[in-house]
Length: 106
Image (cartoon, rainbow, N blue to C red; front, top):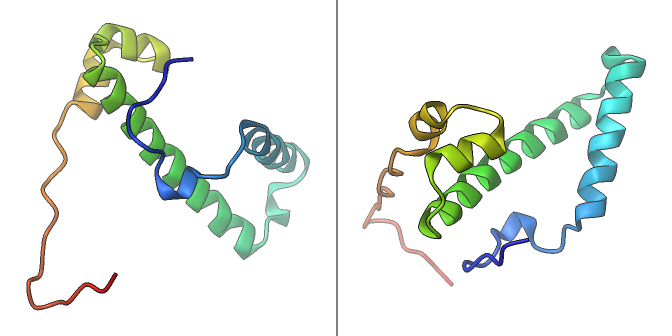
């Protein structure tokens, strides 16, 4: 597995691969059993997991591009075409909006 040069996002620190696999297995088992039994909290958890995974994929794609991977390689890893990978992940993130009237405390 390639070494990632940037630190993991805060949300990923302390999460083991096994716990992610267990959570995914529980979610998939729930879908197979009866999806209407998901609670509001579980739905919110699924949404958080979806957002976390989406952000993580964007982060890893940026890392792989910085390491020299081609769009073809990235697309292949994601199961999409190189064009789809480039269109989805090739855009630069917009600069953060800074409100200078808001104080940030550390």
